Length: 295
Image 1: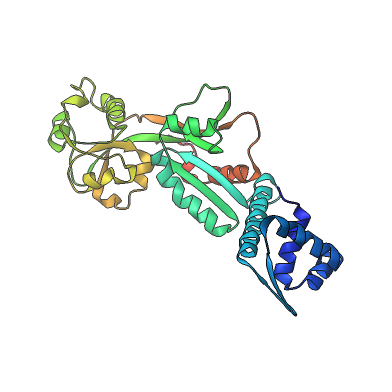
Image 2: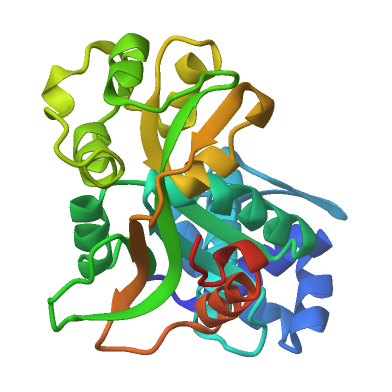
């Protein structure tokens, strides 16, 4: 770690264009500023080309000035992230499941657009990865579909998400053979979700394994594309269906009493949320589509 005063003197000489002007700006003597620069030049070599009434940075000087500027920016980011004074300035990190993430991400972008000092880092991931990312302090906030039992985490209800049976628009689905005719569009959670919902809609059905699979994708934003094109049906969380760009191409089949999951907001229990994270959570809890409801 280099002496901060030496670096300030060097950077001020570079910005003002002279040792005398730098000394005046810093409230130091010219001799003191020159001594600070000599200390740095003893380690890095010549930093300035000195001409009468003009100085110019050497390549070493350019590199050192870039280092000083990078360090100053990093310090400002650190202070912003640790300060609660400006809660909409700094970084917030948020990791969520894909379905609710599709609904969240445009809202997060709106917040960042309206608050230029805010940087939101968001990632889609399954529950196990979300838990590890928050536990390992890679992300400050997370959403999971199952309430964790780990005492290192605080979990509070965030919103509810129902499962939906989604078929192509115009399809009339009444009986199990209708699903067999359409075929299943599978995804990583597809069989588990379909089993939970279809066992309620079609009690005594022969099982999801008896349905032909007409497609598979692990990209949550793409699951409904083949359904919209008439290639099959799927079972998917409501937030993913609400985020689809062509709702007119889809039909949600009434399955009676809904299958509803609670999404849990998690963070580490050992320390309070940053001001930026508290601000973001407060904003999101006011969004009507995330307010808990029975659908």
